[in-house]
Length: 355
Ligand code: TXA
Ligand code: MG
Image (cartoon, rainbow, N blue to C red):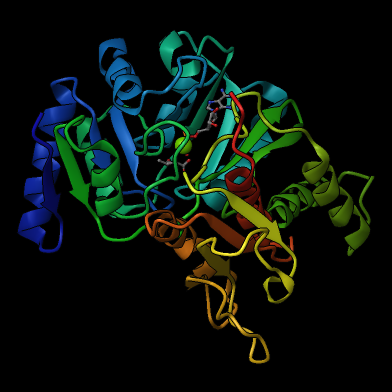
């Protein structure tokens, strides 16, 4: 199969790319589209035959459910059966973060094909803020199932070139919307009644989720929280972080082919054997440190900016993975704010699943 790439740099190019994407989607074909998190491989979520092609192109196992991207808010109640006790919390979360990098897992409705939800009683939904994605899904007028546009178990693509290196020959069309803004996948939260469970750390941090929950309780005049009670906020954040991960979250996700080791301080690290070609992935260089023993060095953000680090993480990892190294050494970063999601991805990259 020939894989076409279309850019979106001028209004005319964008219109032509959107036309081609909608035509392919209406034809039941999968299309790689930019989102604000990472590139997605999208197909009509209500058509099993179309969704099947996503699984084929990615070589994704059928037990791993897909995220459904909605054209607008009205679609939420058509795909999810929101329980009365969750309603206020759902409204508060989407009021603040939609469209954007937040995915909610909610009870599903019958309309969702089993293939999308992997037979689960829940469906994962989000609304992308990316202008290209949002144009295409609104023009189609139906939800799009879209996992990250990589082969199963590999690093998520943050540029159209990454998508091409993952899926060329397997899909008909890639729409190039430039590099992804956030660079890591959306935050996934399961809404269970009035409780929330963090299934995947992402651009929306546990602290921000806890703030939304706390504000809602204030508005509702709940008694368990006093005005200015920061302890409550900290407790909610902590409870989010303690919860176990989703069953669908495999350890092998985001794995580069090159073995990756997490270290506290790369300046003190030496390879096990002489002659090993090693690469370093770190936040920013330290003035006093010597990096000469590394064959290749990639910095996530020389100024130590977490947003920049998240946005560049997968591209840097991919570059190191393609450099023919024997090992990659990655420096741990502080697990606060966006650092939680970045460390989650580094940890997953460092533990290839034996399966
Ligand atoms: O940022 C993102 O979320 C990107 C862009 C393209 O939207 N998508 C993405 O999809 O990362 P994917 O398929 O690579 O990751 C989705 C994760 C999987 O780990 C899957 O197991 C989990 O969401 N998931 C999907 N539906 C679920 C459900 N009903 N319950 C629990 N986990 C679910
Ligand atoms: Mg993925």
